[in-house]
Length: 310
Image 1 (cartoon, rainbow, N blue to C red):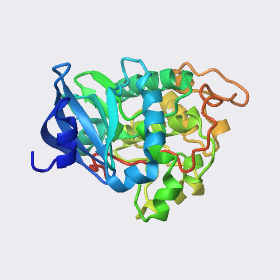
Image 2 (cartoon, one colour):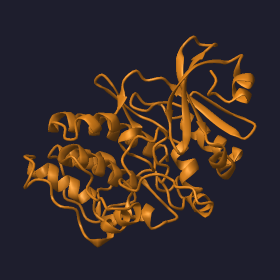
Image 3 (tube, rainbow, N blue to C red):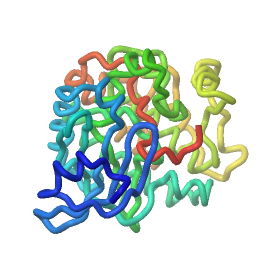
Image 4 (tube, rainbow, N blue to C red):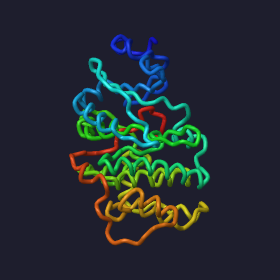
């Protein structure tokens, strides 16, 4: 393939046969490749060289190792990774389907039962990851893959490796994705991010699936970020026919302060189904202690495929 870097095909020719490019964005280029060892197809993602230099090989490998240990039916696992010169790459199973971002471009508002089924599956993946101290940091439609009725969350580990380097990336002038689903604490550059940040992003995705647009949007990325600090989103129920319990759960998960949200993603899912239990202040969620390493401007990875709206 002429569009695959020659150094990559030369270095990996005994492991992978490249078939075609299947995605390209500001963060990475994605190829469909055939694994010569297993006989299966994989999505091989190559970070762009500037991003790879900023993140660094050691940091990238460390986070990929953590992600590769996650085992759950709704988590798309990292299979392999490595470096070739200035290029950092990793593979994941190739999913024959579409991502939620693509679906929302053609069908902006989904029936509530389908939207809730997708959120339950993503919530199960996040709960499993949080229990192992791993916070995704970049939950958005493009990272939610749909293969028939099966839902998988992609890019665990990669999101963290890149988001932790956000300050270095912005210093180079690199634009690092969309702020539409980012929690206020991520937008504010908080050093410690826990599972409640993923909860906020998940609620933003559900809001969009119901209302046809995210809870906050501005004319520019900065305006979008600032709107979440100006006040709560417009409640969706007066316009869209959804149960009061669903609206109440979404709005609580979108609270500006993490302590005002649910204690965990699983508690948020329960509330969506009308199982909310009144509690006092939310305790620290699973994953917070194990995730206490500095993570400035987390979750600002943006789409590896570059298909979503700004």
